[in-house]
Length: 129
Length: 240
Image (tube, rainbow over all chains, first blue to last red; front, side):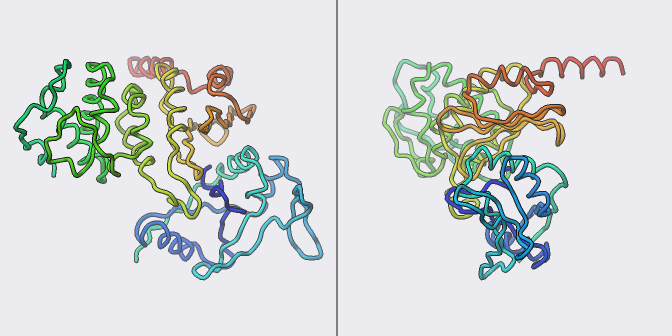
């Protein structure tokens, strides 16, 4: 469950899109960030529909914008993009789940995280320098 | 390093107070040796860890807790080979995580398994930024809140699994499958963010530590049933 809870102060939950980078590449990036390039990395794959479903279950209203082909959610400040592509220099697949961030209370975040953590087991990758 | 501190000799008695258990310097150094050799090197040796916990618990018992903050807790690598009088306060370095030091007595009384003690130490050893920018080390008050609850339920509860949350809170989990599990996240203010899934119903929310036990006992998936589980297993064993 903790895997789906953002770090304090983060405006979104950091995720990666497997449409942009492959799982081994994503694993290698996290290996270099947190494991000194060595060790086991576990990656959990979830579809956007799983995220939407978990968010709705926790009381977040979602809607799909047919014009821009984007998912949006209703926040206290109005409609916002639910998912954003946020590439960084070392990880071009980096994205953000925007409603799992600063504007959402802890209880709602955990409700969503619990539902996302059940289901398919993580993929495990051994990374080496 | 294993026996280095054990071989250390001191020219004067380490402690001259009224508590006989600490008259021998060897005992104290032995505890230090176990801490430094086994708790923070990987992998942790479970046998030695248990010995360490037992020694600590015994000292607590015998000394009625008086040495807890003054003499036993501040253990540092630099002092490993020195004969420091036990009555003198010592400076603390990074050898033992502060979270553990702040909850030493509760940990010693908790009666958790060796594996669990070792895992809690491992989680408590994580530094700022352990999971990226903004993630925090384990909060001592969160651990204390868990230990307070555990001391109430240890006799009849199954031992949970432990997770460190990115905000530094300790979370415990009892998991049977995706539809039957309980998660309790201990906040520093003695509140618990809980999720209880028992196959038929789900309850999620925030409650005070005191309110959690009755809540758990009302659920179909109740992890506070250890004696019954053990009894059933024994009966099955005898039958087979």
